Length: 256
Image 1 (cartoon, rainbow, N blue to C red):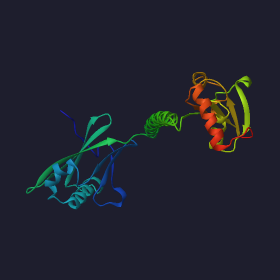
Image 2: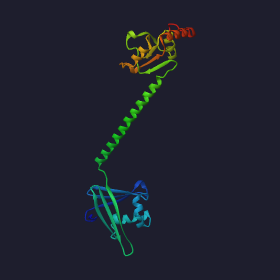
Image 3: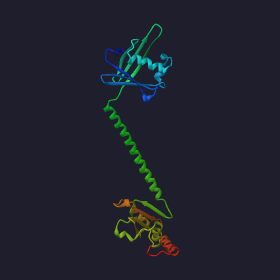
Image 4: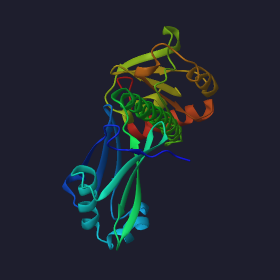
């Protein structure tokens, strides 16, 4: 059987605070040995539904009564404390008269210490960090999808972002200043090449097979991040035929 300790035997202090200046939500506070216990009560929760019959369904009347009992120490009320758990107390308020009596119990929980609040903030921070990591993963997946879309055929060209297919001097046969992407594509086909790389404002042309380009572009190179590789999907015969068409239709010269 739980032992009820009279509130005046052990020095308990009580306070009632309105939350955010609201008259409909209050915080019942019990302080013992500098330890703060509290319970938030409003007309919209289960505790009030179970106890409003004692106060004629008047929340305002309830506030007046507990203020008289806990703060003003009205002798009409008997106030006791039942320790329930390490972090929880029950405040028992009893009222007896020849015409009316009631007993209510307000369970107050210990308010976290500053250290515990910091620990809780640390947990929230870790949760946010984990969410941020998931977002980064999602962004990476999205970037991969975008890169995949970029590699789809565009007039016979495949784009490989942040990839370099001309890492060695002997691999590229011609280097010209970059003027426009369309000019680079036309000049590449006109010269009979199937690949060019854009790097730092210059165009590097390479004469090799499509398969060789694909094999090289899938490798990892030190200077990949600044490069964009364009590979034309054509056979060697098609490259020659396309070059002849471009030269005839566009009048392209070696001057790019």
